[in-house]
Length: 430
Image (cartoon, rainbow, N blue to C red):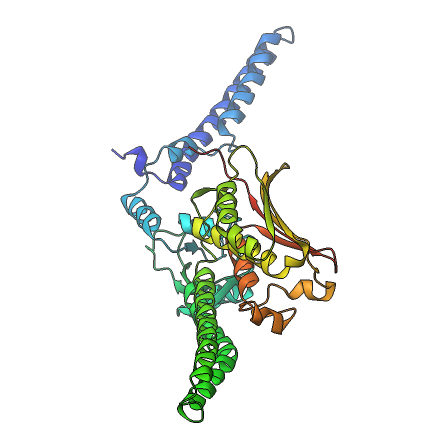
C-alpha cells in the first residue's frame, strides 16, 4: 500500500481525477432519473425537481478543481534529510551564501546573507536586494556556460565594504527540479585586506612627506656637531634640544599614523560595549586641566546628573575627548576658557552630544570643510610649533564614523569654534 507521505502533489491530483469524473457522471445520471420520474408522475411533484437540482450541484462541487487535492498532504510532508543537512551547513557558514534558481529567484540563504542584504527574501528575485550589474550578469553567464567565475561587489552604506563573489553552478539532484540549473553565490569579505593595502599606501605617502623635514633637521645638526660645533658646548646643548624636539615630533607623527590605521581597519565593526560618555568627559577634563592652567585657561564642564550611555570603545572615546579638548586649549588660548558639555538630545532616535567650545580666534569658513583631512592645517607653522601632527581631527572623524555618529564643526572668525560629536544613545545599563 502506498504511503500518503510519499505521494507528490501531481500524483495525488492524478489519482483524484477518476473519483471526480465518477462523481460527475453519477450526478448527471441521478438528475435524469429524477427528472424522468417527475415528468411521469406529473408537474405537481416539485420535490423531485428540487432533489434533481441538489444532485447536479453536489456533482459539480465534488468535481470542482478549485482547491487541488493533496494541499493538506503537502503541508504535512516531512522535509528530506538532505534538505535539513543543507540548511544546517548554511547556518554554520560565517560568510554570506545565497542559492538562486535559473530565474535568479532566491531559493535559500544563510543568516550572514540576510544581515548583508536587508531586502533579501526567499522566493523573490535577487535583483530586489542586490543591485550589482556585475553579479547579476555573472549569474546569467554561469547559467549559460556552466563555468564558475569571480566578480567584485562593493557597498558604501553604512560603511564602505568590498566582497569577492564566487558564482558557481549548483549541482543538484535531477529529481529536484526547483533548484536544478541554479547557481550558488559565496561572498568573501575583502574589506580588511583592501583597508590594509590602502593603509600601507597612505602611510608611505604621508610619512615620507611629513618625516622629511625633521629628518633633514636631524641630519643637519648631527653634521654640525661632528664638524664646526664639535668643541662648542653651548651650541651642542642648544642643538641637542632642537634635535630632541624633532625626534619627539616624528614619534608623535608615527603614533598618530598607527592609531589612525588601527581605527580604519576596524571601521566596519560597530562597538558593542556600553560606555558612559559623561564619565569619559569628566576624566579628560581632570587630566588636561593642568595643561590649561599653564596657558592661563580654565576648563568648565557641564555634565548630566545621570549616565550618558552610548555603544562604544572606551579608549577611542577617550581619544576623541583628548584631541578636541587639547586642540581647544592649544589653539583657543586667547579666549581664556574652554567649555565641555555632555547633553542628551531627544528625538525619534535619542542621542548623546559631546561638545567642546573655545573662545579663541576662530576658523575661517573656507577651512571648515577640510579640517578633518589628513595633514590639513589652517596654519602650518602654528600647528608645528604647538606640536600638532595634522592628524588629530582625522582620527576624531574616523572614530565618530566607526561609532555611527556625526561630527559637526561651527566657527566664525573672532568668535571661537565649537566641535560637537553626536552618538546614538544606548539602552539602560543591564
